[in-house]
Length: 187
Image (cartoon, rainbow, N blue to C red; front, top):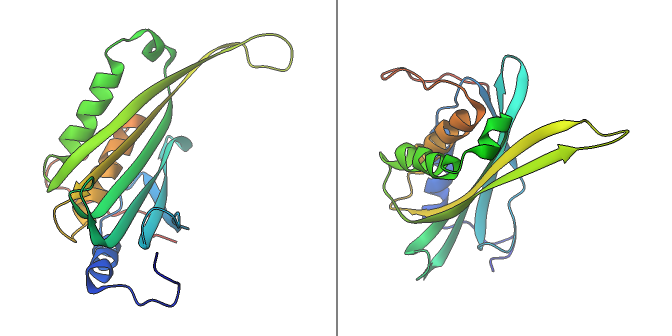
């Protein structure tokens, strides 16, 4: 592991610069957060909250790890780990194909990028509330954990793809082709 005094390699500096150029979705607030220290010698993390009609409906986190020593499992020196979560309609609990649909949203969002070694999971959690002090009825939360390796140090398209996925989870309609999102400033 790199020590805090190690200067980031040129490739990681390029990754950071590309992330700062990534456009922000107009319904998604991005904020840099502390990155996990055990993933790689160099890492950056961003959290996101998606709003629809003034309510937070989805959230997530993306971490970009860089290790100058190439990892065979990564297929390179850089790995992206993304988490996306949303509360969805109770009908999703009965839909056996929903996980496949959600995964296809990720694949579609990443199609224009240069990613490889894609893998992950989609999880549905169904909560049934009973009795005093608990909200009765059904609530459904979906969560996707995905990892992939970018083919270059230009991570901006991957951040944009992840925001597209998060918007899909939030039920926010896609932006029309040719529209460049001008979103909230990053903290």
